[in-house]
Length: 207
Image (cartoon, rainbow, N blue to C red; front, side, top):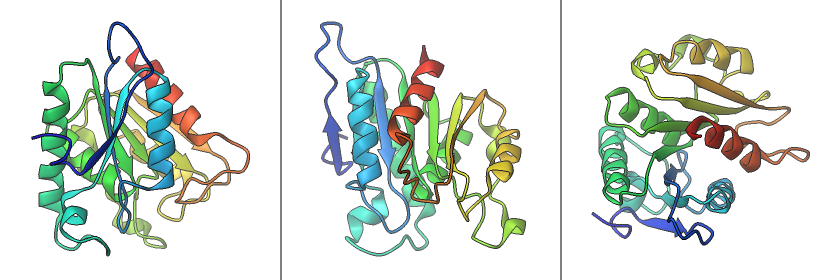
């Protein structure tokens, strides 16, 4: 297993004689890929903080260049677990993993199975389909014991900020919520530096 097997792109950390402070693995949402502008900005920010940051494609995207996932959840979770195992094999310290929307949800399910990272970072966690709060995706959250950072927009139709706070209360490990005022599911903001806020929050957890 290597970077090419993950269809990954590495953002090298700023030069440090002691080596990277850790490894960050981030993956994309449904219909997206590793070249999401948000993932690129996040990995740049992590590298600036001294981490080796990798943005990678989920298995379904490696098979198909376009389109959403379909019946691929188990394979995608297996791919995430393999990526985390690869990151640990590098011996660079703590492993941070997560992703945007579907990618974050799949990573959270791997983490709940105890095969996850040292820190879980979730961007726009898709708590429920828009307009269907009764279909909350929370069953696995109580099995997550590692520190978890939710970065979420207050106008996200996949879960309001108060709904996210209630879901975060189910997580067994320490939780931090980074609230992005006015942002929707893409976490776009004209006034806030979303990557800087999210990475700073996760870096504090690691420290």
